[in-house]
Image 1 (cartoon, rainbow, N blue to C red):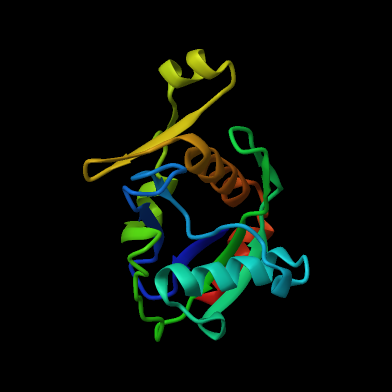
Image 2 (tube, rainbow, N blue to C red):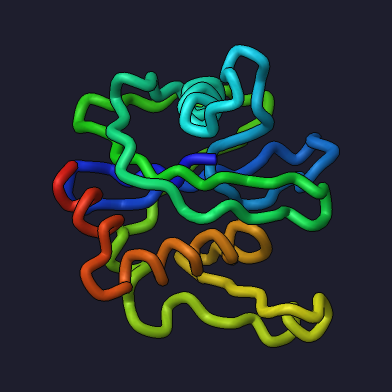
Length: 172
């Protein structure tokens, strides 16, 4: 999975809306990504970049990998996900695949990092028995596994002397 950030101001994070006909997570908001392929050679960066190109048409050479977030287990499917953070250069162009992805949209990075923007969704936390996070933007509710990855990203970004923040800002 790739957490894609646009290099051009206003720096924004790209999300995808999964197609309604999919068996797993139809219509949900996510980051581009998917299962590894033999051609990836077990490299999560190669997987993330290949999936980014397949789903939204951005070629690997248009992405500067800025970091890696800790592996996270998607409990429902028992997948181990390695979130990669990448900065998309100004020449990146999007082409939504239409099969897996219905649309994409951008959220300003500043909106995600704003104090209190990402919050613990107490109803889902109670139902799931573990802290679950959500973020709302222009009528879209980002939650579940994507909310958890956002929380990890915000925590890594906000850490004192954050190497992730430095790497992303250097790519701008």
